[in-house]
Amino acid sequence: MIKYIRAVFELKTIIKCNMFIYYLEKLPFFGQYISRFMLKHTELKKAIAIIASVFTIVALVMIKSLCIFIFGLGAISYLVGKLGLSINNLDSYYFQSVFFLFCILGAFQESRTFLVSKTKYICLTHIKLPVKEGIISFLVNEYLIQFISIGFTFYIFSILLLHNKIYFYVLLVAYISMQLFSESVHLAFFKQTGKPLEKKKTFSIFLFVFSLMGAYGPLVFSNNLLIEKFLINKFLILIYSILGIISVYYIFFFYDGYNDNLACLFKKEDLVEELVRKKQETIYNTDVDVELVSTQKINKLQGYQFINTLFVLRNKKHFFKYLKRRLIFLIIFFLFGLACFINNPLETKHILTNIYLFVPLLPILIATYAYGEGFCKFYYNNLDSKLLIYNFYRTRKAILQNYFIKFKIILKYNLILGMATAILFLALFCVAKIEIWNFSFLLLEITILVLNVVFGIQHLSVYYLLQPYIKESMIQNPILFIVQMPMLFLTYVFTMLSLSPVITMSIFLIGSIIYAITLIVAVYIKSCTTFKLK
Figure 1 (tube, one colour):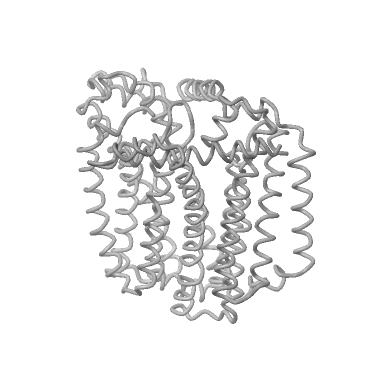
Figure 2 (figure 1 turned 120 degrees about the horizontal axis):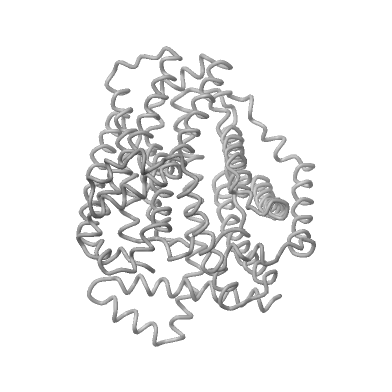
C-alpha cells in the first residue's frame, strides 16, 4: 500500500508542476522560453513540485483562515457591537461558529472518495491501479493535505488569537473525526443506492440549514444557542474519537465496495456514457414540445441563434433546475426569517433594521449563488464540446455570437433570481413593519439585483476566458476557484473599513459595472484564443 500512496503523491505533485508550467507559458514575451527551460531540467521540476505542494497547504491555510476572519472574529464582533446583542462570551460564540461551519458543514458536506480529480482519473484510467489501492491512496493524500492545513488554521484561530488550547484540540479532533465519519456514511450510502450521498439535495439543504442555525443562531436567539460547554465536554470528545477510529477501520479494512461500480465514476469510457445518457434524458424527458410550441419562432431564426434556441428549448427543464434550487434556498431563508420573527419579534426586527451592516458580505454571498456555473457546465458537456472540434465553431465571429446568445439567457435567469431575492427582502421588511420608503433600502434592492447580474456575467466570461472544463470529464481548472478568492479579501476589507452602507453599496455598484464591462471586453479580445477544447 505504501508504494501506491507514494505513486499517487508523486503524480499529484507532477500534475501541479505541469499545471504551473502550463500557465507560466501563457505569460507574454518570456513565458514560452521559461516553460521550455523548466521542462528540460528535471531537478528544477522536482523543486517546483515540492514548492507547489507546500504552496497548496499554505494557500488552503490562508483561505480557511480568511473565512474564519470574515465569518468569525472580525465580522461577528463588528455586527454584535453595532446590533448591541447580549452575548456574554464572544470567544464561545466564535468557537461555536467555527465548529458548525468547519467541523459539521465543512467536514461533512462532501466526500473525498467521490471527488472527481485529475489524479484519480489518471490513476484508475491510464495507470490502471487496483481500484481499492488507488482510491485509498488518493484518500490518504487528500486527508494529509486537509488535516495539515486545517491544523494550522485551527492553531492560528484557537491558540494565537483566542489563547485557548482546549478549543484547538476539540476543533482538530472533531474535524478529523467528522471527516472520516462522513467518508464512511458516503461509502455506505453509495453501496446501498449506487449514488453519491452529496447528490442528494435534501441532505445538502438540511446540513446547510442545520450548520447555519448552529453557527449564527445566537444573532437571533441571543444566548439560547450558545452550547460551548456541551461541545468541549470530554464525553463528546471521546465519542468523536471513537467515531474516527471506527471510521478508519471501516474505510481501510472493512468496506468491500471498492469495485468497478465505484471506479466507473472516474473512468473516461463511463464518463462518456454518463454524459450521453444525461443528454438523452434531457432531450426526451422534457415537457417542452419544440415542434408544437415554437415552430414559428424557430423557423424565423438562423445560424447559431437557431441552434442555441433549439438547445435551450429542449433542455429548458434542466436549465430551470439550477434556478429552482436557488429559489428554494431563498424561500427557506424567508421562512427562517418568519420563524425568527415569531419567536423573538423585537430582536429580529432590530436585526432587520440594521441589515445594512451585512452589506460587505453581499459580494461573496451573491457570487456563490448567482446563476451561471451549472448552466455553463451543462452547455459545455452537451453542446460546445461537441462543436468545438470543428474549425467553423472556433472562429472569432462564431465565438462572440454564441457568447452573447448565452449572455442574454444568463442575464434573464439572474434578473429573475435577483428580483426574487429583492421581493423576499421586501416581504420580510413589510412583515416586520420596517420603513421601506427610503434611499438606503432602494439602494440595497438595486445592489442585490446588479450583483446577481454581474456575477452571472462573471461565470459566463470565466467559461470563455479560462475554459475550466476538460473534454468528457468533470475535472475543473483550479483557476476557476482562485477567481472567487478576491471576493473573500474584498469582503474582509469592507467589513474592517466600517464605511456607511450607502457608500459601500455605491462602491459595489460602480465597481460591479466596471468589472462587468472589463469582462465583456476581455472576452471580445481574448476569447478567440482561450475558448477551446483541453
